[in-house]
Image (cartoon, rainbow, N blue to C red):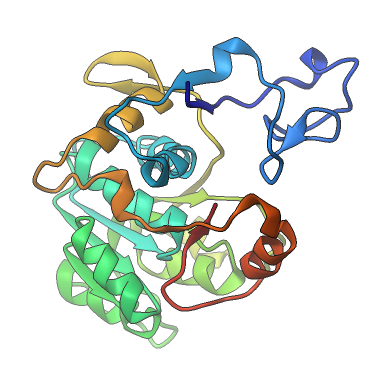
Length: 271
């Protein structure tokens, strides 16, 4: 039976194992590059027969994206910006398109042509290069741009799926007063001018991994709606397999590691 593992593991439950962040990150229990790992039964989900292996590989990053996409819901939000079109960014675009009926416009920022094509297919309303982001949001929201590059208005919700100083600066520049910036992915050290954060009363929140979400007025583990979405094809709700995962045989672990540390156009999650 094929299964996927979810849910970060509290460190006190790992004893006598060495402490780790979540499933697959512990020295004694195996990891994502290994042939097997140890997980609690409650963290395992059977992969439906209708979901092929390439789509199943995308369940975990798609769950991270869904957790972030659902983290700040309001009936007032109409425009969202997704900065970054790697695996997490594209999955965030798909999650918003499928699960956020309150968002009418999704502006995605993608650097490479293949990423821009995928962002459109996954539901982005507008796709722009990084240098065009501020002008695109200005046109869509009817805002003005100050000499500093800061918009007078902006989007209610901005998802930063890059996590660099540059991307966070762009996020704050295009977020409307009182809006929210959601940081997805792994943390890092950044240096950003936060003046606008106070002046415009913008909120910044993090979204890490997955857990329990409220979907259709029901509390559900994040993996469950993602697994169901992967089996279906509906308008504005592509299958998970549409976000490509390049596969390499298990014997090529060193090659996979080298490949993940290089930036290559149009290539996304390795498996």
